[in-house]
Length: 126
Image (cartoon, rainbow, N blue to C red):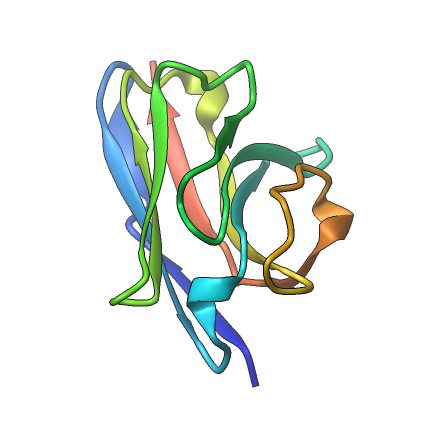
């Protein structure tokens, strides 16, 4: 049974920072690409960032490029999302996700990911 558990969300003022973590279990984590997605109220879930299974390839949505950094620690089975210079429009529930299959190139559509965490709320006040 694959489990993904996000943590690190909260309330922060605009311009502030948060670091999200996603701890995984139940699968050989180090062989799967990982992604972060978010969903704001009344909006569809959108891609934020993704990292290849090796950590060598990183992808970001244009809206977060230069502000967010995705990373992974395969020894800890954990993926991170460092979020700096936060804006009110970053307010959303953030989800981490694991690719459906191992050793695949990084993909951005949510349909490529077969396992999801429960989400963590990030609220940025103006």
